[in-house]
Structures are given as C-alpha cells and as structure tokens.
Length: 180
Length: 180
Image (cartoon, rainbow over all chains, first blue to last red; front, side, top):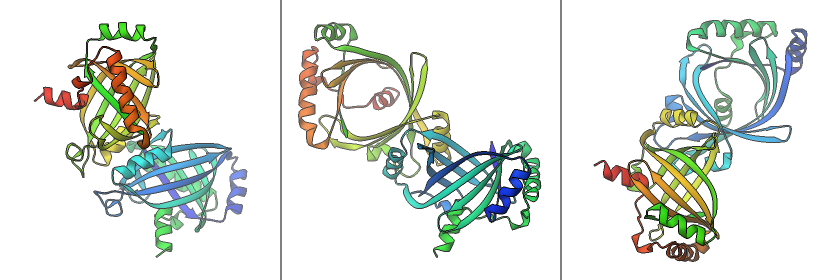
C-alpha cells in the first residue's frame, strides 16, 4: 500500500468549523515524538528515504513504531512506499539501530488532532518550532493513486483550503531548513 | 546486561533424567525460526555481529523479536552484548531491513525445550539439519560475568555433561560450516 498525503499551512480554528459542518468525526488527539536516523551506508537526503522511530502518547498509553519511507513514486501528491510495524520498546530498537551504525539525526515533536472525513484522515498538526498545519491522507494501492489524490484535493477545497498551497517538504525538512 | 551461554552436543534423553533428579522445572517448549541478515555496509562475519528476526510459536501463539548481537567481549563463555525487543509484525520488519539493504543470509529452525535450574535456563535444542544440543545460559551484568560463567560450568557437570565439550560456534555457524 502507498500513502497519498497533502499538507498545507493553515490556522486550525477555521478548519475545525468546516470539519464540524462536514460532519467529520473527531477520532483522537495524540502526541508524537519522531526520531529520524542517518544511515551509515546511504545519504537518505540524496536517496529520499527515511527511517524513523515514533513514540506516541495517547491518553496515557505509550506506543512505539518503526517506519521506513521509500523515495517518492509520484511527486505531486508526495506518494511514497511506507512500511511500518509496532515495537515493544522504542529505546531498545534505537539501541539496535545505533549499534548498526545508524544515528539519530533529528527529532520532530507534534500534537496531532485527527478527524475521519469519508475515506480520508484529516489531521490538525501543531509542530514544535514550526506552527499549525493541516494534512489529509489515505492509504491506496498503486492502481488507485490518481483517484485517491483527486479525492484528497476535493476534500481540501471543502475545508476552505487551497490545494495549490501544498507543502511538499516534510516537517523534518522544514525544521532542518528553518535551523539553517 | 550480557548473556553468559555454554553449549554442548548431547543426547537429550540422559539429560532429561538428570534434570528431573535435580528438580529442574520444565518451563515450555517453543519452535523458533531465526532469520539472520547480511548488512550492506559491514561484514558481520568479520565484525562478529549478528542481526536476527526470530519468529516463535508457542502453543499456537506467534510472536516476533528483533535482536542485535555485538562482538564477543569474553571468548571463553561466548559473552556478548544482546539488545532485543518484540515487534508486532516480523514480516514488515523484514521488509524494512531489506529496503535498507540488509538481506536474509540464513535461516535456523529450532525446537527448544526449556527448563529452569536455579538462576539458569537449560535448553534442550533440536536443530534442523544439525541434531541435539544442550545450552545453559543466564543474563548477568558485566561485573558478574565470571561468577555467572563458573555457575554455568558447575551446572553442566551436574547434568553429566563435560564443559570441555563446549561448542563456541553458533548454530548459524555450524549450519554454514556443514553446508560447505
């Protein structure tokens, strides 16, 4: 499966009103702390890959997941291969990665307020040191990427947002840019 | 923590009788399928490291764990750093490793019958294509490695086994040797 995802900068208050008007369902609010790794044998910035451990807190529960993101397969919608699985202990997996020569390169802290809107997930993201963003996303098989992207654009418009404002840079990239 | 581990070839029937006489407690029998990986940036055979995903079946339950084993820190007892955590989906972690350039190098299939003997775990291992072995092991902090190793030797003797028969080669190494 691939992830179709569009992201824009947007003040959350107005978007919350539109979500309510569209009967979107408030799903959950989570806090995520993402650690991204540099590889010992590849320049992930050049290969456009990412390796991440995400620690998530949700109503007192702490979970951890590891995710590999492959290079973009479709640039307009930021579509890329994602492979992910839960892990019992994020700190131990961090130890394993570091023993293998991977090193923590950056940390991104987010508060994410999630809504279900049709087949899509709309997330109001507050990113430490960056501000407020809205993401819309859906998983789709490769054969269904075009229609998944068209649907995401349509939903963005319904939320009063302009798909042309799409930010293709990841939060990680924005943070690295802002610190330069 | 470090793992102190001694292993000898031994027919299981005689050892089971000694375990019963010593009031060892039968803990469980599990089936393990271990996949070992080659790294894209290091020769693990030369650096004496290992990266493994273990799928374990126990009374119908399937679990998966990832383990990194560091180089030997004390050769006599095969002591090395081990870092391990459970993962929700071993196949997905395999996908992540392969996307990062790690490749499955060998598979070891074991049936393991475990007993608790004092502070130690005694395991009667039946290894596909290799035969029957007995392992005795215990975790220990670095400051306690010598006494942990002495205790393992003593227990091996109580089981009617000769510590001088110790096999320092891993099952993986024995399998690779036997296939040459």
